[in-house]
Image (cartoon, rainbow, N blue to C red):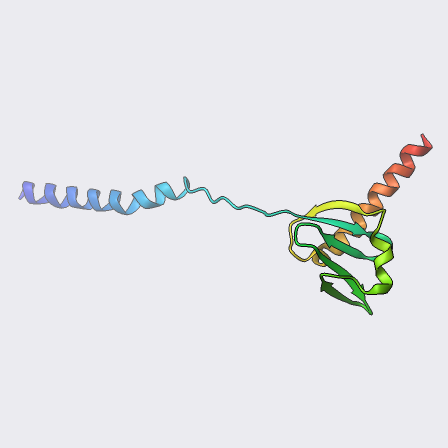
Length: 117
């Protein structure tokens, strides 16, 4: 009878360890995420982005964002000089447009403040 009780106790302990082992290792799991950066040149005066890697333009037209390999004829003169290079974590830069505008405004304000000193 004692042998039977010992076997049952050993079986319960073994089962408990087998069930607990996967949960003990769950804390050791590491999930790696990567964020792909996309490079753009932003022409803020006219809300135009250019992705040099893919040679795609993004611009706002009548309140809607447009995309194309070429800008409309009337906008082409705006992208010859004065662009700001930046990296964003999206394939569509207009998704981060509010952040870009706020970030560039903050940088300009900081430069103005530094010039006063």
